[in-house]
Length: 192
Length: 321
View (cartoon, rainbow over the protein chains, first blue to last red):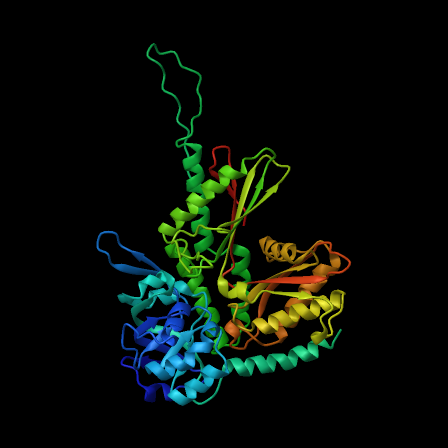
């Protein structure tokens, strides 16, 4: 088990390899479909994303009616591939060091990871409670006009569990599993 | 889990003579129905049914130690336990809210529809459901989970006197990897027979990789038109994972699909590993001579479905899973 601790750097993430199980501590910014589209459209982000990690997540957030404080009640990853058209450009334009999501991403993002020194971390899809437990606080919210699941939530986390499935050296576990399973599928299809 | 409900007895009148004892529910039938619906939504969102938990634990035991697959399955197990303990959503994507109602003859569907909508709004306020319904044209999220098609309510009349309400919460990740094939399907050399059906189902499993939050369960419908096929494929997911198809050939196909899918090595979350599918449920509808559809719905490991039978005062009489 490896640890990745805030402040994050490109050097740190370049040391990570596909298959590494990593515990992340520090800051995460949620961002999914609407955020990526808006960033890609050239709208300036409301916070400096340099050396930050974007988490593909639309959390369930409750706001205390009296104190106005936000509380995360569920926060697992959402499917990342929908950000494939945008992700590499967001890496380039805003200097992020990594992305957390689920399901993996495609060749454009993999090339982006290599070129801009980023990694793709896979969190366990559906594990919303285990992951919400790792969130210590909701520090801010931006772009709430996009709706609660689509807004940018600024979260502080401790020991957030992920697996590196795409590294900064051009390796993708998803590409590997897809191709290996395609070979087996071909054999199995011919059996009947 | 059933709601407690006490019938009050009417007090004796002044001259001491007892009136006929009449049982009056502690709350109105509407309030009781609301409480039962909220309880159903809460439990469906937070607690996996026993049959699903069982196959997940078996899958965890099968994975090799110290692999990312075992790591993922352990997190899944911890998540199941934690969600149950906290009565909070297993997954933040509380999904399409699908109600399946079996009701007696002469039942007022419109009234129940209104009560369900009310309960969905309340359950969203309470955080059992995420604000998950978006206007497809404007992108606006009303925050209430109500709108055209939401929640999705399917009514069936049955020959019993009871009212049964089943609920399934199906997340977007797994819904997105669902697929519909039209046979013959030349890219796979899949013809209009059970072997062709087998080929396209396996292809759908391969295409899904880990994107549907596997290990998952498939609901499949052979035949029907495009719409009916997809509806039926989802209704197959109302079957228990451990049941057996009464149709011999379909039972054999269900078993074979699971075995073969697990040979593909896609594994939990697509990390590679031994369990890719936890189950497969298949049924057939008649089709037109010109059409042969195979409709496949993928359900993630966070397989949220539950059901209740309501009693005379709309209290929860029985849990169905």
